[in-house]
Image (cartoon, rainbow over all chains, first blue to last red; front, side):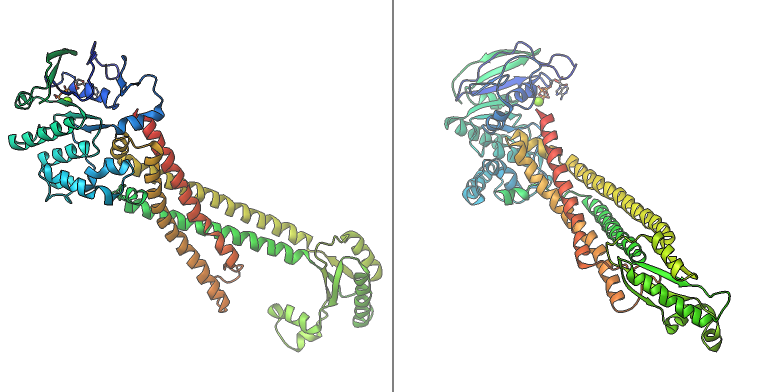
Amino acid sequence: MRYGAGPEVLRDVTFVLESGSFTFLTGLSGAGKTTLLKLIYLGEPPSRGLITLFGHDMATARRGDFPAIRRRIGVVFQDFRLLPHLSAFDNVALPLKLAGRHEGDYEHDVEELLSWVGLGDRMHAKPATLSGGEQQRIAIARAVVARPDLLIADEPTGNVDAEIGGRLIRLFGELNRLGTTVLIATHDRALIESGRAKEMRLVDGRLVELRSAGRP
Amino acid sequence: MTRSFGRLVPREKGAAPLDLVIAVMAFLAALALGASMLAARASEGWRAGLADHVTVQILVPEQGDVNTVMANEVEAALVVLRATPGIGHAAPLSDKEMQALVEPWLGKGALVADLPLPRLIDGSIVPGAAVDMSSLAARLKQAAPDAELDDHSHWIARLSTLADSIQWSALGVLVLIAIATASTVAFATRAGLEAQHEMVALLHQMGAHALFIARAFERHYALATLGASLAGASIAATLFALAGGLEFAGIEPVPFLPPIALKLSELAWLVAVPIVATAIAWITARLSVLAAVREIY
Ligand SMILES: Nc1ncnc2c1ncn2[C@@H]1O[C@H](COP(=O)(O)OP(=O)(O)OP(=O)(O)O)[C@@H](O)[C@H]1O
Ligand SMILES: [Mg+2]
């Protein structure tokens, strides 16, 4: 994978995320973690290589199938990408709205989720009035609220303290137990050591499997 | 869901000046549209008013008893006119009417009554009828040697040219303003969407269909444009209605010019301005969003 005419960021990367697995992706800053995640969540087309998602070969899939596939993936972006004019509640509810659900149906779920990530009292605040860690937790809540089949999180605990971090990892674990495949890019050693999840490391654009284990 | 989805599109900062520009352009477009309808109506009126009349002038004869000769010639000319197919009504102007005609130049009084004035006969042409003017003139000359036929063709030709140029200029101005308004609306919509690119990209990433995203935005921009252009066109319509009211009350806003009041049926045409503006915003928003989404991957 290369951006434009730039150098190749990723090469010879071949792996399979088993359905229901829990994997950490590590690597130095600039190693290409975000790039690899982008390829998986269909944020960027690969310059070469094959990607298969939920049994669809993305090289041959019709464009019309992409939205449905994207809706099965929850993403925590490294830079959050919250909508600034919407409240915390509305940001989190966005995937449910897109899925065609009515506010009456999901109001309770969204409120409960926001309480779980410690934002029960900031539900109607706009992102700009929240701290970095609070914004990050909204981004996480938004990624998990629709119970996606695949959760991709890019540095999801970069801005929170250890206690909140522990809470968040329990949230991911809970989701994983319910059947969601989880892939988390992180530098956070404590997070990685907290369970016995598989770890993949990006070195020089190649993937190195450090640990293949069960669930956290 | 569509209702709550509409709220997703923010009222972007800095939209007020664009709304104002759209309102002003809609106002100008409505004025131009009204003005071109007035120009069309006025020039048609001029043409019709002159074209459906002929005037026969019996000049004061050089010799003989002026009054009897002229009276005889008037009678003879009337006979010819009334026998001509296509001429509806023909009647000589009375002394009173004649005096009223010359009064602005010569003033009132005994002097005028004594002046030898030519006699005028006014004839109306049946609408749609074609009258052979040269044969009529020849027959008139035969019956009444001092008769001169004026079919206004000289005036009609000149007025026609004037009316044509007024109509074409009005149409030209209308087209220019329409183009400017359309570009303004399209530009404002595109500029607004530019600022929303992040949101379009995010919704796309979350798996929203392109048409679905487009619908949320097009509704937003169509409504904003509808409001602004409706305001502008309404002000123009009010001005026309006001002018009509003044004329109705007997006050001429602009003396000597044809009436500047639009008929109700013409006023209704101004509705086209906000409708077209809204449609342009709608289509621009849809095409821009679809193009933006297509570029994202
Ligand atoms: N949009 C882009 N255009 C061009 N080059 C890019 C782009 N995004 C990333 N890169 C380059 O690709 C390489 C990998 O970047 P990437 O963001 O994937 O790293 P990362 O492992 O996520 O780093 P970090 O831990 O700092 O988030 C970097 O050298 C970066 O400069
Ligand atoms: Mg990164």
